[in-house]
Length: 530
Image (cartoon, rainbow, N blue to C red):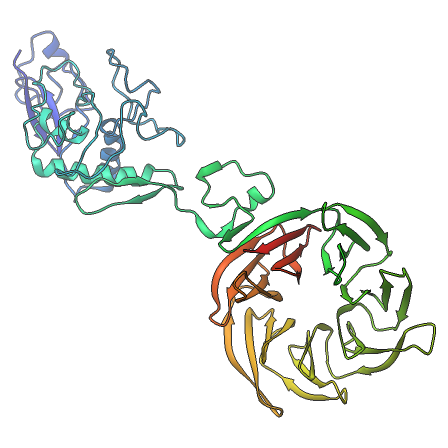
């Protein structure tokens, strides 16, 4: 019987003499009995099913486009029946209504190589021959490898072989090639980065990781993505610093860290009500003191360690083991600092308590005065030159004269609670929940102005200054997104980030470029600037 190919409604199909348009792909009953005399007949005059090969028509309906994309699964080497692409036995044509599992690779590792741009646009495609779906029994010529549509010596791409074996034009083959590119992009895993150029097939690149964010699942030991995860699997990123140790023991947030000068012990306080003493050589906790209440702050001055708690500051001499309790009804003590033989403590009620050292009584600390003015809790304190700076939840910074203990300035640059203050050279650096870090400069004793504002895009919680190995100043800034940024000063160029399970609530600088961070889980990390 004579076989020929013709096109009806953008469909390429096989028919016999007298066969008309297909109706549900039904074969003419009378034709099978050799009695049909209709020309044209609305039923098929062939035993072969209609081919699912479409001429490219970019203006076709959306339904036709969807069907065409499904048909291309076979051309792209996808085996929807689950069989191997290398299996050359005679099997039924794949069903285009079945979707390929999302975890199935687009290319078979053994029979496909990575696609790359070549002199003709395509290299390294499958070596095995493809055929038009549903036309395995048709007699066709083998692909002509000298044909311009065959783009590699190892065998043409599937869309090119369709063009040869199904009489598709070169323009239509180019359209199929474009669809193949689109199909590849749509079905590629989300963690892959696909780059394409006009008229070329995309290359598969190494997944690009987000260098600004650590995988939260990895931090919690629950990530299952492995190397394919788009986020970092690391506690930090950047150069010029490294992690030395992890000290675990506290069950709640670390609220204060102190390394007394000349001591080989590290002291940490936590909201779990305990103070831990760590051996700096072994990293082991050698002593735990349960104080029975939430610790809001902890600092060291000489041989003294001061612990701020609700309505009391505890003073402990680490050499003589003497301890004193300084009681005042002021609420939680959030911040402490010392200068000129005076201890300053910022409290929840907005008051700054001042104790002076004394040798005339058994208690070496005598309450001298209280500094009032803030309308919210005093959250941070810093001393620079002849001034005491205090930051508050009322969004203001107050400047106090250390000689007179009088407030001489009120700085109103922040729009939310001021959370941390440090002094750097002749500048004051402040951070706030308004997501900014501000640099202040005193033009004279009567005027302070903001010389620079750095936007963080997250609430800034803690500031700390350290020097790197080249003695260059580096600013550490803890943010509410559970990271600590490292900035070079004065440029504020970011040089790295530290990640944690919960926000870092305290940072303390140590000797020789060492610094410590304590987060909300109770974990204390030791770092060093290289």
